[in-house]
Image 1 (cartoon, one colour):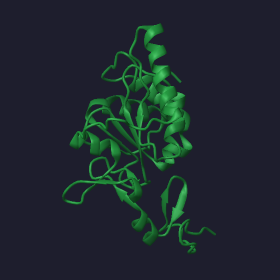
Image 2: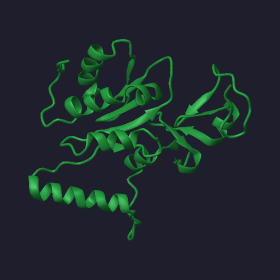
Image 3: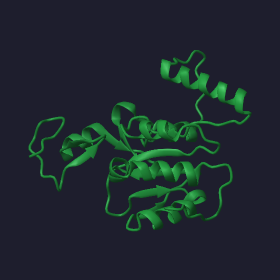
Image 4: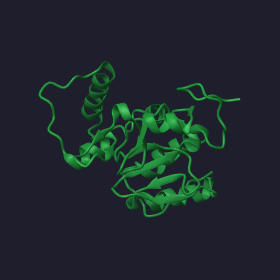
Length: 204
């Protein structure tokens, strides 16, 4: 038996909603989470930004859409400070401007994926999706050929749809949980390498 992570109600698994590996009843999920109006990722209401019409956005999409001014004295935690130092050292010693992929940091799996991918020359924005019947990957048109080529070889039953923007990819919870290694392989070897072919197949 499974229970709602918020109210403790006994759940029907066919109707349960999921976020970051936790299950919620419909009511608690709707009370605590939103879908980003641009990328469709699930976001906690606590970390949701809204436009003047009340439409919800994740931080990445809100900043891209409204281009907010940077604060004069932004707070920087130790992890971010270490990342800046790592980036600076990489640039000095390698002469290449490598960066980490961007992620929706509210997801428990994406920071692990970003860590394993490491610094790359062509970062993408990676975010989490809930499991849906309609699709399991949302991807922007510019990288869709590489994703379709890779997925057709390794996970041919996965459904892919297109999302607005550039260098963006959303992954269902199933993919983030159960195909961690393949996702890292896809990002490192297909989507973030220096030269991006129109189509490519990886060797098994």
